[in-house]
Length: 262
Image 1 (tube, helix red, strand yellow):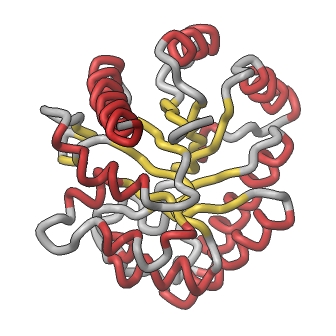
Image 2 (spheres, rainbow, N blue to C red):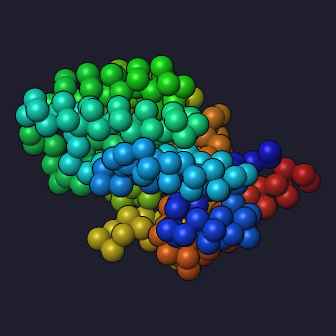
């Protein structure tokens, strides 16, 4: 297909409603969030999830692991081991669901990285990446507002040292704009960024849509220059904000296509 694949989150629990919404508005796929408490605990629950995912065809599905409190580098050895098992379990599940991409985090939900080991994080993330590779899954690290991945130099190091891929969240980067430019999160490893999360900015109120379309243009131009970043998730959890952002992204893509054709 020409241009990026636009995806929406699994913002509706009813699969028929989610699929109809995505197809009606021309989305290419679904970015499906898995949380620790939502992972299947038996074969029946896994079969129900598999049935739900298969019901979304022909939409492509990629996976977003929202495991707050599960730190691969936790200085508590038992907690770190439990986190590694949790991620391995999730990747096994994604493989059985025929998934090929999974985005995860370091420092999710934390105000600081106190109690987390850098060396343990690198070792644990490297192990998870290797597990994903063995299962045919590309494991992608997302940049956050706070913590190590909120700093471009450390985000780059984690990607380089663990050989993971990247998911570039332009809203998180915008929240760090007073300290860092967006390109600092991407241009050290442009060939490693596979996915983008698109909205204007994360605040205490959550993910905020652009108030005007120009709010996103500079960041979208940067995304278009990343050679493998073809999965753009409009990461908003209410329909109005999502469609507002969709209008802006489509206007940007149309304007770029028109200029290219002249």
